[in-house]
Length: 278
Image (cartoon, rainbow, N blue to C red; front, side, top):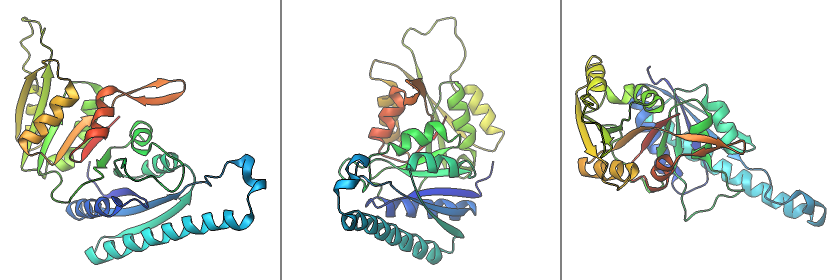
């Protein structure tokens, strides 16, 4: 699959600019069209209080939301025009995770920002990466809120467990893998692995990627109780990786999609961009 259509979620957070820089870099590498999407939240004033709050105060809040959207649109337009990236801008109102997921189904890649714990959004909290990763059906690239720029996808580490989600993430990442300088496939083996299991972890996927012209290094680690997420993050740091590819795991609970422990840890603690598929 080639990347020809990218959707980036833009917001009023300080990290939005570095996220845009990353999206422009990727769009230029792949010759892709970039769509910026800004979602204005519904009023944060509870409905039962509307009659008690003067109309001018409600209008002030609406004006503030519109002003924020216009500032971000200006940043997006100026940056894409300066870099010669074909682009378009969309601004809608509603629940961000739902709108991003809907529009993202017509993109090859969705780019989101990690939640910044030090900056609250203008509207109600919306766990955007969590919900979009699990509900959009598209590969999602999450950029750390403290991303300082630099390459994305030159040094790639793949978290591989031979499962369905990891398989989907691996193939969604092929456009990045084909442009990379180095790819490491990391498998975390249980300590009590059967002595009769002679299957070389990562060997099959390494052979498969080699047929796509991608050289792969196999990286096997025995789980020492530290946890899969910790192993992935530690190895990414050791290898100087600038992109982590992994499946996103979740399950249904009380009609809501809830992330699995490793996926939750990666989204909370990611030091580098992470490409996830579910």
